[in-house]
Image 1 (spheres, one colour):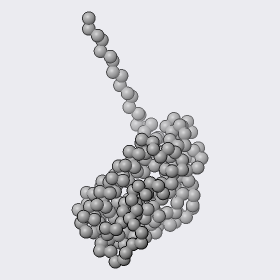
Image 2 (tube, helix red, strand yellow):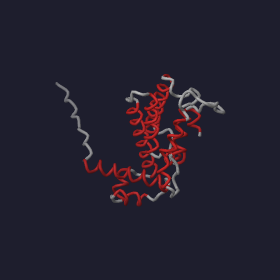
Image 3 (cartoon, helix red, strand yellow):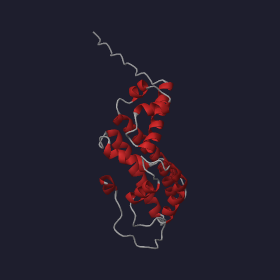
Image 4 (spheres, one colour):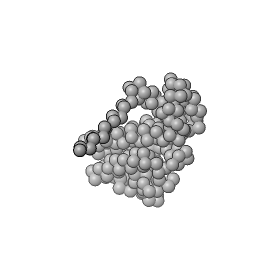
Length: 213
């Protein structure tokens, strides 16, 4: 007697409109987190996204889930920027392209949420963070190997510099400062070029030290 083969049920694919709603929620949340901080009312996020509260909670059952999705999405886009930068022929141009793309993501406002609002060791967050860290290391190693990046800087130096320059942080209304971000970031990047004309105080900031900040 033959044993019946179990029927494999197909997992239904999300509808296109459901995916669009989720993307609108994440985009609106990122904008409002940058403008007002992670404590912005969720109904305000739903209103900006053009969806009902029920749709927001159907996608994200609590604030932590939404914040985590926003941070992971930003990290994923930053990783994609690093991958595109690595396609550049010039190693330092790749570093510059990555840094300007990362500044556009306003990581200065979003990074503090990682340590203040939810589990830092959530597998989705760990995977996104590991990917972006490895790619940034690759961008910087390539520039150092080409003799274009000063050897006494670490990944943490670059990421902290981008974060500081891309301020104002969440909770301020000085968004007019955006017009200066890329100008000042380029000044910072020019200071990373080799050969170095000064000796930096202290030591290069590592990824391990950056995670403890």
